[in-house]
Length: 425
Ligand code: GLU
Image (cartoon, rainbow, N blue to C red; front, side):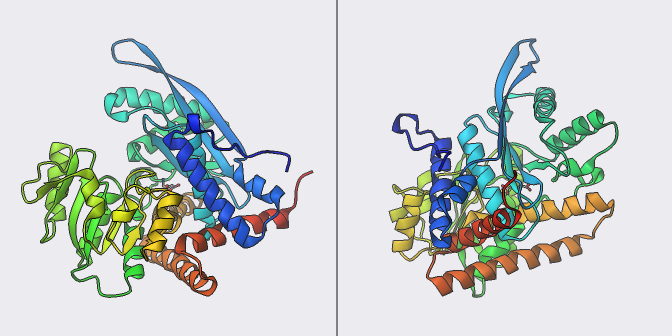
């Protein structure tokens, strides 16, 4: 092995480093099951390209701030790199690398022709005005311009970014190209070539995965959702629409609980008006940590990485966890959950709905054609359920957890392409 994968350095363990350690641990396990040699393991453990940029932003008061930005292309062997762009103060190169790696396995698992990428800018978007945010986005895009393009690397929304961010990226790229290039990003507004069904796609996928994993009528099934943002709020809505009783949700403002079930539509309206779920009158306040320990059937972590750890895993009572977020469960917590008989539908399967509809958006852009929302929903369902049944069959055949099986399939497909293509030169 000529390239060494960086090892854990206790003094430098950040949340981003923890996410990368989790991703490397999962890769190592899958590589073991697949019997991959050391060279290929190292290839898959290291990103093909990583770019760190310093992004100057002119603030409204004239001050100049410089923030760190990243774009990591973990793998490009199965197609263009694909993955979201995150604006979050704690993001770093390790976190972005982990998220890019998970995108590679996710795309391979659901059978869409992409590699994996992720971008990040270490900023809290809430502290910027809209104009500052626009300047920051456009300058960041300009810095990573040589890397992106519809045939190279296609960003999409992630934590802290949205349709407006994607519109600015599309415009910045298009102005530089000299013509409109809608296929450079997905998750755009529909007026700019965004796909019908993209905004709720990750949540719709979470609903599809949760209902498939339940394997029984959702009527009265109790659910707690951690995170009430772009993924969590619509996921709570769709699960509630399907007949589940969503009894608790949380966001950065706090957590709320109603044993009889929350009125999700009213809660969403309340959160949109007040900025959070805290104080919702038709519910009791709950501690953030208490949400994880509730006696519910299903727990949906739908915010950030590393929230289910060895500290709270022993107290989790849900029998089913459906990961709407990327990397919410640490490997140590995973082991505890397995020991307790909890089923975990892993992130690379459960939250794949977003990138699946991103792919459908990109296909529409490349063909300059628009699909109906029915066509999009049908294809999303087909790809989600196809991957779900492959994962559950492999898990049953080989005695693996769903996470192990999902990684064996995703990593295996990427490894196979590397072996078929060979090494240049
Ligand atoms: N950010 C989403 C994810 O983590 C979507 C990525 C995409 O659509 O490219 O899967």
